[in-house]
Image (cartoon, rainbow over all chains, first blue to last red; front, side, top):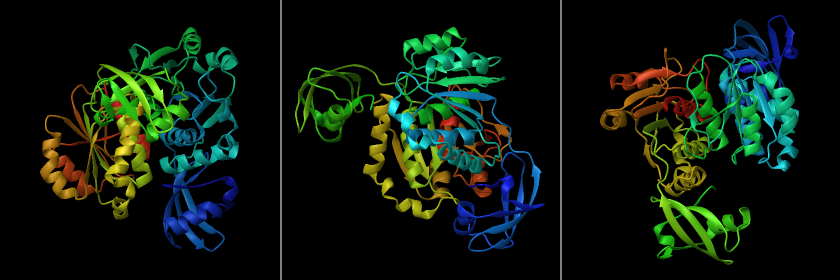
Length: 236
Length: 236
């Protein structure tokens, strides 16, 4: 936790914030902070700044906060990710948030196990928790939007063209000939298949909608290595 | 597990391999393979090829193997990584192996908790296990060398100059001005600090030995996002 995030509901008066629960415990027991200490803070969806602890009790803490900086810029990248297995999905959502990706689609594809869609980690609250942890790590305040798409064909036919419009649309595909480009100047839409890959039907559908199949070499990467690796490569 | 790895000790006769334990269970229970099935295999430190299951019993399985392909090329990159906390270290070792990094130094720095060095995950067998899992994922056969360095100063003074010689030497440092370069043609030595960063004394020591401090933007990345992101960026 590199910043303490609060929401407008935590504001008890102008410039005064009251926290309880996980954030109180973290500030007191992990950071070992005391009354009078200053912490980096951020208003969820708003600015970053500093908070001075004015009261630290068993049940809650109060801070005086001054918000004076914008959060870091969002990455101009939309990711469309075949749903990984739940434990991996949690860590990838965290990483994507840390890296600054703000539009995330989790998609069903032929090689995704159907049972993954039943995971409690896909409940809204569980997703939100990973996103908040990622923002706290990256000193960011802007939550990514995560959208679940359980049907490949209607998503690709009806929604994807609009999502990808005006962007460089890339599909990571180990069998592709073209290496993934470096340092792309404009916005990117990046589709990443499951570890088993997109099936030919799926790749053909993406190519038919203007996607380019790209590779990062002959290795079978796991999703947690592939996604940050592609993002690091694409960004200027 | 995208390939089944065996060692020369598993070879019972020319072109015949016998496996037991974890690999047997995986082949039988996870892959659901049967006698007569063909699998992708690799000889640890050797070539890749195909194996046909000739016997599958409770205690062991036998395969006829034909090895005819070289493993994927190693990355021309040496990483020097401040020791992350043990759980993260395990996943990072796995990712580095998957990405094809073959020389890994785990280093103590001022912001690394000393207790991390006591972790059972640093025992040779535990490290080896992560490396093997990474090779199985990436369809590779060449184990990375992992070296533990518990003393920063003598390592940087006495060993690092030789390690970095003839390479582009980069130190990932959030406070740096220079963006990390893309698509470097030659070999790279990459130093990555702990999440708290290198302290000024450490960065100065690296700079004095020809390292360039580079950044991938203003975000505080976690190690698991930062490392693949830097590697994806550096590779051609």
